Amino acid sequence: MKDKRKHNLSDSYSPASAGFSVMAEPIAALSTAPGAAAIAVIRLSGAGSIELLEPMLERRSHPVARMMAMARFNDPATGDLIDELMVAVFVGPHSFTGEDSAELFCHGGPYIVQRILQTLFANGFRQAEPGEYTRRAFLNGKMDLSSAEGVKQLVEASTHQQWIAARQLATGRFSETIEELRSRLIGTLAFLAARIDFPDEGDTQDVALETVVHKVRGVAAQLQKLEASYESGRVAAQGLMVAIIGQPNMGKSTLMNTLLGHDRAIVSEQAGTTRDYLEEPCRIRGRLIRLIDTAGVRETEDSIERQGVTKALQLAEQADLVLLLVGMDASAEAYAEVENIAQKIGQKKCLRIQTKADLAKAKVRTGYVGISCLKDHGLDQLEAELVKRVDGYIGQLNDQPFVSSARHHQAIQEAKADLDKFFVGVKEGAYDEMLAFELQNATRSLGGILGVVDVEDILDKVFHEFCVGK
Image 1 (cartoon, rainbow, N blue to C red):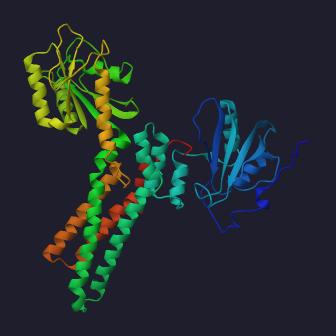
Image 2: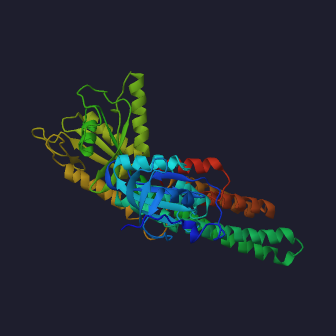
Image 3: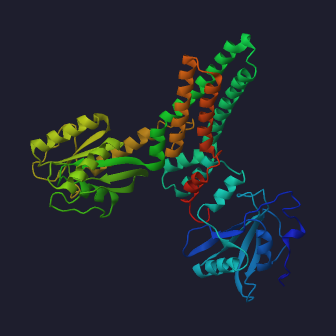
């Protein structure tokens, strides 16, 4: 016979007895993907969340923190048994958020999930906002800001390269490096503070300043290495940016649709069909590529199309790789235009493609990859080249921390600029107070990566892109 007695978790422990207090209101959300599934996980967190949950549970055994247990979930208003599920409770600060938390592992039918959530919302919980669990973990000191961003990237990672970028953030490896550099700068400020506070100790002034300069040079050198890693780190996290460039009717949109595996761009024999650019992510042999189809490059009187041509050339400058397309039946002027564009944007990041290789008497020119989307010819060679380019970037990422976020990259650039001003000040004999000012600015820039800031809008920007339940 089943034991239907209800057990109160507070009989064995409570946040107060642990000396832990949280003011955040209780929240609840589905943490697994919506839709029918065998199992769904509903996450709860906040002050008093365990106590609020217990009246809804009909337990078979006495609850034990951090251990799974079976229970019946009932609606207190109607007495209905909604589901038999597994439940685990976590007493703060020993939880993901640092607050009292619980996780319900219920059957994944949409009705069951919605009924449980509605019951929770009717009994003291509110719907969690996107990223709120991770945000609370950050605010409660369970992780720094860059690690929180890594959690988001791990959830969204769809390729090995994205996993590599997300892992070093989520595990704290990158933040440990930034914190170590920040701590070293704070240490140099102590030297300058001593010089400022004890100006009469003239015999040690030059020695102390040399010590400061030496330490700052070490930090600057490591920041330089981190900044240099951004190009590869960005490709790992965001994918290889590949712009498809060429004159009208050279098969740009057809190639994009073929690589994507579905029709995304309009294909027409009418020149100038593509006036703006289209960008779509694409996985090729497990590598993430960002394909950009652009307007055909040509002289035109159409003002809108002319803007599209200008944008196409700008994207070619920004891209990691440019596919320069020209048809087998194209004129000599078209081939000359390909060479002209390659000369402007750099030969190394250009890959010349001859389309329409299915035409009679077609002959691939030296230095070109011949393809036919119609006959599926040459696409394997093209894909192999794309994979090679991605792996070329990823291969530069060794075991050392690297930069994969634009926000982190900007902060590091700002810190480097502050250190450059410091070195200029030393050379020009600036007062110690001015030197300390530049070091303080550099320290703040690095602190912004970790979340050692008081600016609320930075936190909003980071966490609002998270999914609900994370």
